[in-house]
Length: 200
Image (cartoon, rainbow, N blue to C red; front, side, top):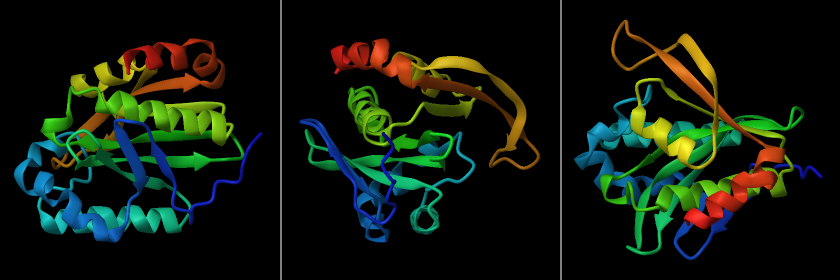
C-alpha cells in the first residue's frame, strides 16, 4: 500500500518525547540559538546553518525543495525541555521506486546523546515503511563522521559500502568519501523496529 505523499500537507509525527513537524520559514527564530552558538554542528555538512544569514538560507532552500516535491524537511521539538532541538529531512524521494534518503540531521549539543535521535528515527522510519509503504530507506554520511555513523548503526542500519570522492565539502578543493547505509522493509518489520523500540 503506497499512499500518495502530499508535500503540501503539514505532517506531524510525535511520541511522548519528541514532535516533528514540517519546517517553515518562520522557524528561523526557533533554531537561531543553536545556529549562533554552535557553528561546529555543521562541521561535516556541505551546506551549514551557522549564523543567522546561513540559517535563513538553509531553511528557505529546504522549504523550496519541499515545494518542488523533492524533499520533506522537519523541525524537531524536544518535549522534555520544551525546546526546539534541530532539523532532519526526507530527500531523494522516489515513490515509483519506493525509496528515499533520510538525512540532513542535526541537533544542538544539549540534545545529543539524550535518546532524542532514536525517537526521531523511530517515528520517521515508521512513517516511511508503514504509512508510505516504502521498500528501502537510505542513509549517507561523511566517512570521517564517526559519531553520525555510530548513531546510524545503533538504530539498525546496515553498511553497504563507501562512495569514494563522492561529493565536495565546505572546505575548498577537499572532497569527501560517503558511507552508504540502509534499512529495508523486511528488516524493519523483521527486527529493526522491535530492537529500536526497546532502546527508546
